Length: 340
Image 1: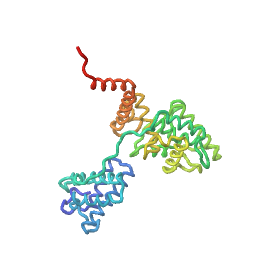
Image 2: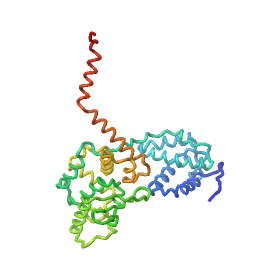
Image 3: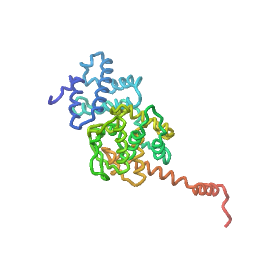
Image 4: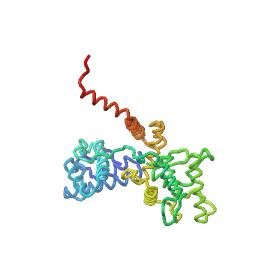
């Protein structure tokens, strides 16, 4: 490992390798590292082409605001806003590293425009009682499928609704993820960056899982299920994948008649948002939500608390008395003052 780069000759490829070495201690998720690598490689390739040099010979001092702005403009031609924002974030972090290594005087990414970050407002179900309607209709067999499996579908829906599990956490669960004695069980979830958290599981969910596992053994003619077995499987007894889970949940929404109550772009995550929003409505603090949801910051949990406050204001504001007051105020503004 070098002691200090030569600022006048530092190659982009070498600095990129050192950048990835520098973030290893933070234990970024593999997907994050892969995303950074892809974004740095693609934008770096565009800059190199503009400089008429091979990417392997591109120097960091050529990564100016003007060059990066032009590269991002080309990148934006065939990439969505979310991809542009992700690439901008990767390059911003990389150039901050270059500044710290004294390879550039300042971060040029300030000169590169990027899309506005999407709203982080929670996206629970729209309308009261939607979660109840969803579960009741699926339990009654509303979902039409070639090989229906009500018990499995209910677990896939109910688990994130009562634990706040992310899609990846749900798919990563095994039977060995459960611990504790009956009535006092907990489930171990592995979240972003390999972080784990333990979430309590109450008796109704225990019973739902037990019924599902019994149906699974009967369906596939199994005497037992090993602890290493995945919690969720498809109708061929293979681990359920991300696409399969999304399809399953989308189908459940459609057949239960609640698909129009789901925010655009949200499927499985709606169940997690529903969990957190209803807890906030019942008085959960931002700190408690942080622990249950596995957030790295209390700020994210605060979004649910603030969202709930807005909902309460809207509810309170719908009082018919406000209409009466509004009419009285309007009338007082148009009526002449009474004689004294």
